[in-house]
Image 1 (cartoon, helix red, strand yellow):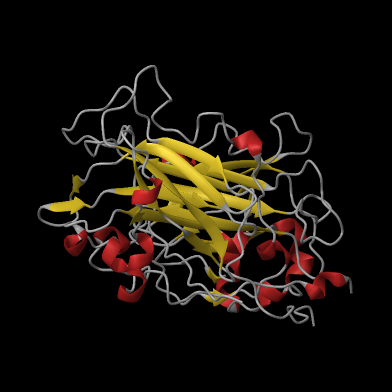
Image 2 (cartoon, chains in turn purple, yellow):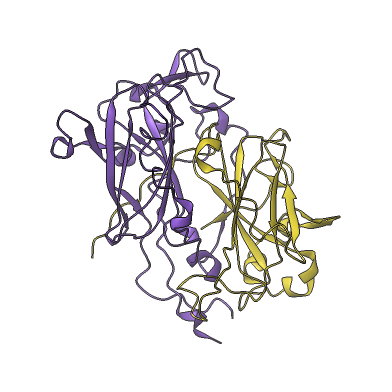
Length: 238
Length: 179
């Protein structure tokens, strides 16, 4: 057939991710498949994926502190890093979407009703593209922790949601970035759903060198998407 | 070469709409496109309840079976986004698209990701279409699925397109793939 057989797939990463059935996080109980997953060898549909370009990103989308007439309340922070594949290669020109609560831990969302005030100057939505070296940078405010009803006196540690596309369907990833030394980690079943050895990959690093004096603290958060297989896929058509 | 460990997945949570919805998200093809169809469906939990805080994303070839991507060696299908996303706040998802063409060696299909509160990692499935039933027996992915579950991957016709419900858990659970 054509050169389709020369496609190179992506390595699977089974030891990074939380199990879909994680009893500590109660919402997983009725929302995890009980049948085993069927292995899907990567073919053209899986090694391609949406390459979502500049048309998706507005001029101030990367700066969540400048999207209104006034600045939001909160600790101003820079969140920056690189998006790499599992071989350490940068992933360029790739869309990153983030969303987060405000400094008081409240989301601008009709479903968030807990009694902490909304901030009229904060939407909590950011978008950017990685540059040619896979680098990205957001300016935002540090989100607050907030209570939820998973268990008695449950609180989510402060976090920022990240959505990444990479270059292929199989690299798609949605995750959460946490802050160093959060005292709420121990009681959070979402963070702790991740295998223990992998949890530190979700925690940003405080970076004094990138802090802007008299302006903003800085946190570094590198994100790794899957790397490619070493050899082309065999012919799956036979 | 480095072998870096992948960043772990986390749930989108209940407030995914802030970050993951676009005004044109459901429109893989424009509203006025001739021959376009609506792919609609519900996402259901293990109690049969409709999940209204899910996000469905679709990825598909154009009607000639091609992708606008450098890894498609036949050359880019320019102007073809191929990607759709729809949340389920109104009780289901809806994607405005056209039927994909056959990718070499496979029956026409759409890859689907489902994200939701309570899903710590996306689940992935595929939609096939009743129009191509004659190609399904030879499709390598459908053939890898137990025969008695294959129908969970095949959409049904409706007045304005197709219906494809996703059952996360329970009776007639949708086949999900390890990608």
